[in-house]
Length: 87
Image (cartoon, rainbow, N blue to C red):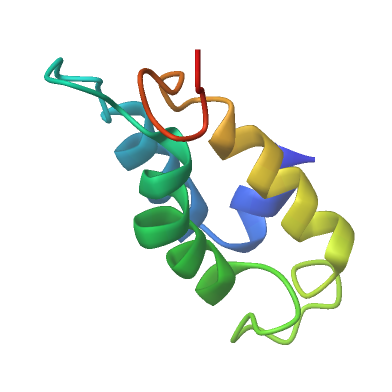
């Protein structure tokens, strides 16, 4: 599905490259969810899902948004010492 989505919306490939470049640089903690909801999800919503600017029905589908979300979120480093992981 990812290949089809990037063929329809090439900016998704650029977003993937950006997500792949995100690193846990150390420090006290890292929260993948914070990075996701502040930086990535808003951009993803501009490219795929019901608010996508392109009128392609596949790009605007819930399934497309979920597939893109799953693909990109898995690329983030794991949460470490944040409120998401209390142990």
